[in-house]
Image (tube, rainbow, N blue to C red; front, side, top):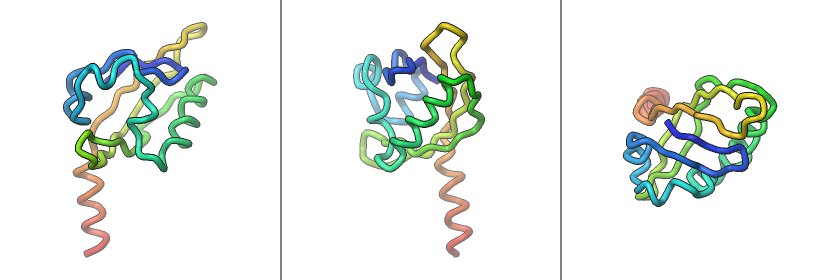
Length: 109
């Protein structure tokens, strides 16, 4: 879970998010969150934030994020849009990397 602004700044990150991404609080908070996503996910994430700004709720949207070691994690996000007049939102994510890897393994084998 974290607190973000619509302009792309991550304001707060909880301990679980820091652990899943292998990052310190200082590497996350007060910085643009777009750099945490896989490069080919950036345009999609920007579109998702724009949809939030227009009042759309996001439910269980899977997006790949970068771990500090260079590996990717698949995080499934849900988020309600900001309240009218507000510019912050609180996305809640869960690491579904293992599930995605298991499905990929079943499909390939």
